[in-house]
Amino acid sequence: MSEVISFRLSESNPREAQALNVLNTWLSKGFSVRDIITQALIAYEVSDQQLIKQTSPANLEAVLSKVNQLLERIANSNITENPESLVNHNLSNTFILSVKKAKQPGLKVE
Image 1 (cartoon, helix red, strand yellow):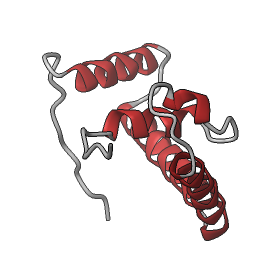
Image 2 (spheres, rainbow, N blue to C red):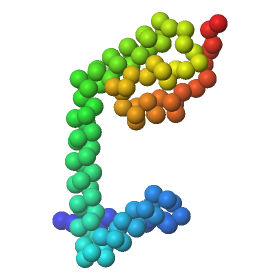
Image 3 (tube, rainbow, N blue to C red):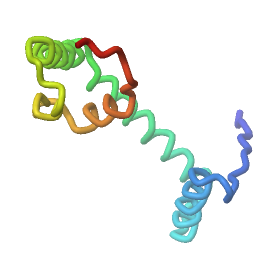
């Protein structure tokens, strides 16, 4: 038994406009919408499984250990003007950028 799946993509939404462009590109190559969506969902599941493997408890433990080391270095130093000098280059740039984006003003200890 088949299931009907229907949705709209709006060109005013940047993500949906991008998806629509990708869809139209693949349609112009002769693929059907059904084939495109099926392959995209399968690829999404595979990438999701890879992400789960990357965030295994061992990997998370290693990252947390590096973060703890960095926090200890910060706590044991009086460097306040250039915190970037304390960055452990073993941490990924993505992680460092996400922490910088999430940071908020806190209490200052003088």
